[in-house]
Image (cartoon, rainbow, N blue to C red; front, side, top):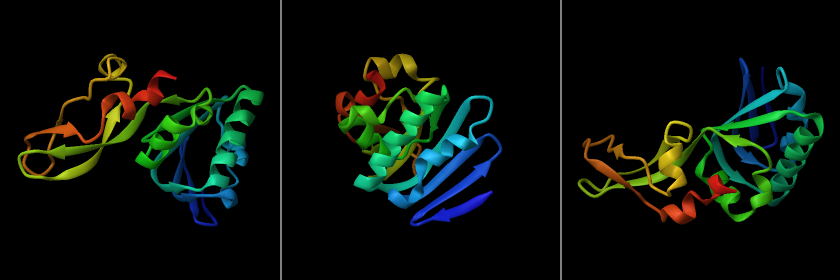
Amino acid sequence: MSETRGRTSIESRGDTVAIRGTIDETAELPGLIDRAQDGRLVLDLGGVVFIHALGVRDWIRMLTAARRTGTDVELRRVAEPLVNLLNMVTVTRGAARVTSFFAPYACDACGHEASLVIDAVAHALQLVHLEAPAMACPSCRAPMALNDFPERYFSFLSV
């Protein structure tokens, strides 16, 4: 099932709800709790490009509704704009569990920059110690480096 709400596209794929575009008040995020299966809502956020202030309000309302209904929320492929939000406004994390997220990487060898997915479960020990997982450049296969300060970028994981 796929639908467009304002500038937000919401698509259910199996047990996952994928959100794409800009999240604003028209996204009606609190209603996503109704899509939870077996007390669990899995959100794929890799396609989110921006979250408006009113979208932040609805995001918090969605997490509040999840807590009230006993729904576990898993966040997959959290896009960089949402990682930045989770870092700045700690209440936006709620009780949600982040299992993967995008992070900015840069290659010193060829200059390529990319937003790469980090598996927060597989790299949990490194991330707790604020160490960026090793990533190979998709262009030249050389090692890439996190293109941000780990203590700032990964801080949402320690909330």
